[in-house]
Length: 433
Ligand code: DLL
Image (cartoon, rainbow, N blue to C red; front, top):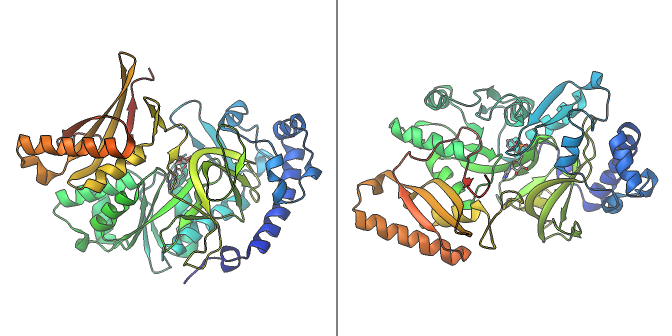
C-alpha cells in the first residue's frame, strides 16, 4: 500500500486529535486577531479564543455560511495582508454573487499535498501520464489537480475543458494513464469515443479521479466499464481549498478527509446541533492550517455521513460517505424530499437507458410535477413504439416505488439532452421563476 504522507494518513486517533487541537487553537487566535468580522462574530456568541482549549470545544465557535462570504466580498475574511496572497480563485455557484478565495504560497503547498495524497491513493506515481480535463481558471479543479500531479512527478497534460474529439486523440496518442474530470464529462468522453469507433482497448487509462458534482455507484460502473479504468471519487469546495478536501482509496467505500488540515463535523441543518458519527447531516469544515482564507465551521450545504470504521487501505483518516446532494439541490416534490442522485441510481440500475437525464420540476394547478427526460441507448432507438412505452412504464414504476412520488417519463432520442464539459445541469425547476 502506498501513501503520500503515512504519518498523517495513518495516525492514531490520539495523535490526530492532539495535532488538530494544537492547530485549531493557533488558527482561532489568528483569525480573532486578524479578521474583524470573525472577532465580532465570536464576541456576539460570547466566545473568546482562550475558551477553545481543544478540538472538543470546536462546537462553541459560531458557524460560518456562504452569506458571511457574500457580506464580506471580496476580501473581508482574508486573514493575511494581500501582499502575502499569491493566488485567487472564485466560485460563482448557481445562485447569488460569486465568492473569492485566496492562497498564500504555503496554502498552495498544502493544497498540492492534499491532491497528491488523492492521486497516490488512486495508485498513481511518477510513471503516469495525467490528463487534466477539469477547467483551468477561476474554478479550482484544473489547477488544483495539476499541481498535485506535478508533486507526484506525473507527466501532466493540462488539457482543460472543450474540444472533446481532440481530448480523445490526446488520451490515445499521449498515452494518458490517469484522467480527472467531472463524472458527467467522463460519460461524454465515452460516448464520443464510441462515435469515433474507439473502445477502451484503444486507450491506456487505468484510473480516473471524478468529482465536483454528485454521482452514484451505478454511474461509477458505467464509467469503469466504458473507459476501462478504476473510478475514484474526489471531493472539495473552493471555500475550503478546492479538490482534495477528501479522496477515495482502493476500497472505494467513501472518501478519506484530510483531517489534519480540515476538521469535519456533521450538523443537523435545521437545529445546527452537532450529530454523532454515522448520522446523516450537513457537512461543516474548519480549516486549521491555511493562512489566507482559514474558514472556521463553514457550512458546506453538502449532505453526508462520517464514518470511522477501519478502512482496508490502512488509512485512519475519517471517511465521508458519498454526498447525497446539497441541501439547496434537494427537491421537495409534493412534500417528499428527493435528491437527483436517487433518481440517477434508479435509472442506471435498470440498464437500457443512457446516463443522460434531466429532471423537470413544475407546479401545475398548485401541484408539483416531476418529469424525467432520459435518453434511450442507441441500441434501443430502433425499438418499436410499444417497447418504448413499456420501458417508460417500467421506469415510472421503479421511480415511484423507490421514492414514493409519481412522475412522467419521457424516453428521448440519443443526444437530445445537452452535454456538459463541467458540472452537469440535472434539474430544471420551473417553480423558481
Ligand atoms: O467543485 C472543487 C472540485 C474540483 C472538487 C474538482 C472535486 C474535483 P466548487 O466549484 O466550489 O468546487 O463546488 C463545490 O461541488 O460543495 C459539492 O456540492 C460539489 N462536489 C464537489 N465534489 C463532489 C463530489 C469544486 N465528489 C461543491 N461528490 C461541493 C458530490 C461534490 N459533490
